[in-house]
Length: 397
Image (tube, rainbow, N blue to C red):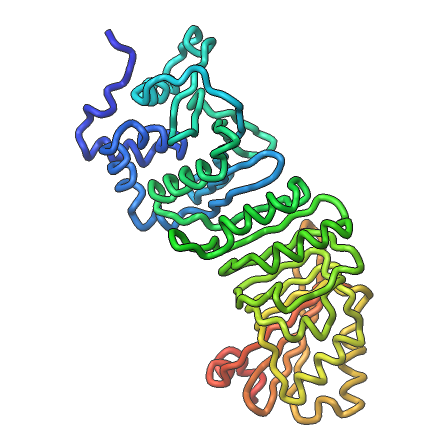
């Protein structure tokens, strides 16, 4: 009697419901069995709740290359395809063995596992087991894929396209640890994934990560990558440039929704005011109380920034009450409505206080300045006067 479960002999309704219970790795394995199985798996994932459940689809370039998937219905898990190069493949079984390897997930076959062989997944991309490695410390499960160095980039992209097709999602984010590669390799990655091409669009989000403080050579690489990238929605810069690294308008020529800079000492306050992103986060900035006062004065005079939300980590302790009182005495707020509020929050059994100032101009625009700690604050810009009357009635009494 066969120990293999007759999965493909199930009634279609039962089969579809079974697919919904499978892990992402199991679904990929099933989809590779045949064109029909791929079509069925894709159909099972095409439902709206499945399409909207993907939290993350990231290609990570570091010393180890990874494709990361995260779904709402697996809230604590990430599903990781780890890619590794090998010089030569000597034992490649037929493609039909993909199904046999998938069935091995459900049975304990020690003899077979002692003699692993490589199975072709796509073109020159191979796998030797569909049994994932579990890591409880990082809440992730991973599979190891193998490819040749010669076709590494193209094979990775083909597999990404395959995953996009099966799960009905585009590649969202490229995470590039640029200090792990030479300049030419970094530029090749950016050019391939972060620039529009005839056959595909650029990714939505780019994250540049540097583990150590930049050298002057690293600064040159980052400058080149920022000038080349064409991310569509989000740009995360988790790097540590030298003090000589300069802000260039070409770095942010695309109007994105989100910009987050971990070490923002290279962005001046004047450059911050001109940034044309919807949400801006600058950590470890050089901004001080004098910059906050300047912002208040510009806002009260009728100036409006291009961004709408900004969170700033200041370089010194900010006493926002003293700042506002001083400007009020000077008459800087003579033509606007100013109102102060305090909010108390309990975080980890500790009480924190947020101080907010609402600044309504005669044109109906409202600016909200907040300080959540001694050095961390934010600005929120509301430009539609008709909505502001509804959202902030206390400013119109």
